[in-house]
Image (cartoon, rainbow, N blue to C red):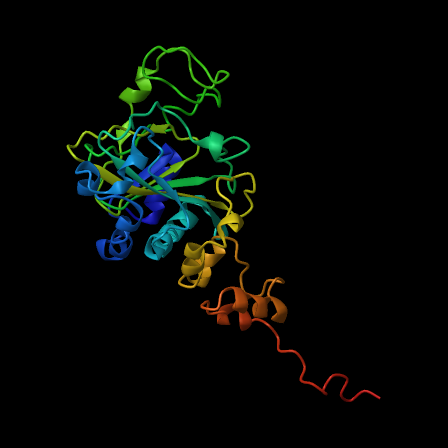
Length: 319
């Protein structure tokens, strides 16, 4: 599927599944660092990895937030293929990444079978919008194969849900008592579950969806199974109401410095680094940046700064 077809599907259905979108050779460096963050399937289920206790009882306990302990994993979050996909789906060249998480799940560790829902309540202070320039993008990136037995997300086409109101947000399969001030629907919605589509796919698969898209996580049933993925979120730069993680409060972590010194100019712009030629870049800020990030090649920004006049030449020719 090319980017035009992907954009059409994303706009029509609210999601698109792109099997193997990240080629194996480009995924391998990041996948090779998974052990820095998470136990292997054998380490978890065999009890040999002391970190296993962290993952028990809470479906979200397996989330690590950016910047990651492995720099290749951090670089994957802003892989050029992903940023080009985000530009195409959002129809905007000036975009930002506003959240990045790596996520491990293990069969039997927790109940991963979710109620059908939308994610907007912790992604925007407003509500989902389909207006050009106002959309937000979520992605799952599979770091290993995710067959049906390893809990792929299930999604429902917006052609089936476009008329559902912003509240309630959670739709149980069967009759239930509503709660959370009406954000959980009273009464079952089996029709949504009957219409859901599995996003199972091989390593490198990307599942891209909108904030208003109904979806849910599903149970891991494979014996001694493990699922590894990333959850990434992009928005146009002007969508200031789209928030999930702040980067400045993480920018003095060792993993952040390792990432910045390996990232390209374009990858750094996705986090809010001003582009070359921006008023921020002056001889003073460049000198300070060289002290903060001694391993960062500043030449893309330095090349746009006019050299100051040489000493003794100011005012030359004036009387």
